[in-house]
Image 1: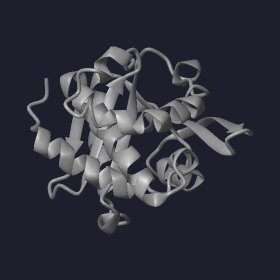
Image 2: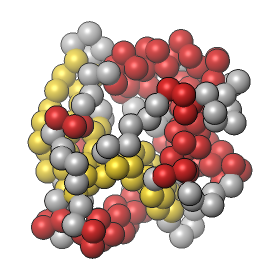
Image 3: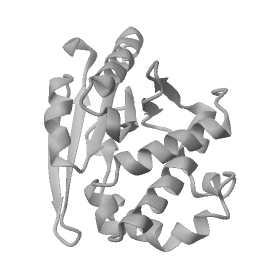
Image 4: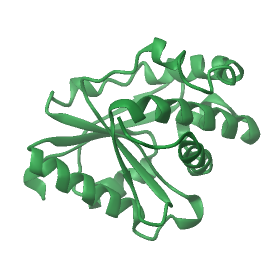
Length: 196
């Protein structure tokens, strides 16, 4: 278990709420910015609460970015969300999360990544600190750790603008899908430790 305080997780959830405002899935789920920000905050906060138990956290030195690695076999379970401290606040976002699940139910990393993979989910940098190399440094640290373990990194992104960033970080695009109903792209990408 990671010894990360609830207050620290809340700080990063607030950061994520700003960083993911232009994410195509969140824009599809909640059109109004104020609502979208609240949905992102509670979704990320609940995931961070759950991730704190088993996942690998990478923080930058100044506290402006976060990367979480989750083993591909470790799926989130609905009952885990019932135990998070912000459970009651989650009732507000339930209709939006159902819509979110309607999109993400398409996504299946396991089709394109093997059991020796850790999933990058999430990674974000404070909006005012983006473009300063923080995300790349977080990925470099994670890649170094995974190379030492003989593991791969995988991710999916719905933002076409992110594909170039991940390719510069050594990830290879393995599959692109487009979901017509939601008008959302999904890019599956993998980094293998022989790329380091």
